[in-house]
Length: 76
Image (cartoon, rainbow, N blue to C red; front, side, top):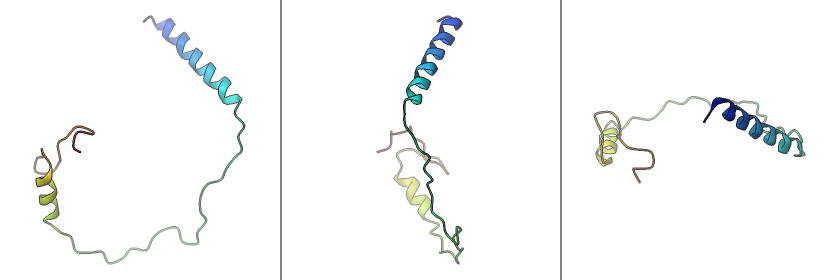
């Protein structure tokens, strides 16, 4: 495609979207929760299971020492 044609099509798409958006009635909505404490308190933690990584990687069809090797959606 020629560059001018692409720019013209992009402008048409943006103009059409802006026109549709102008027709939408909207009101501002505040979303969130007010809390006195907004950060969690850190605890002592739990002991790590150092064998978990080995078991997890062993379950994967393909892996190297540190990572699972897969395509998105390929490991189901």
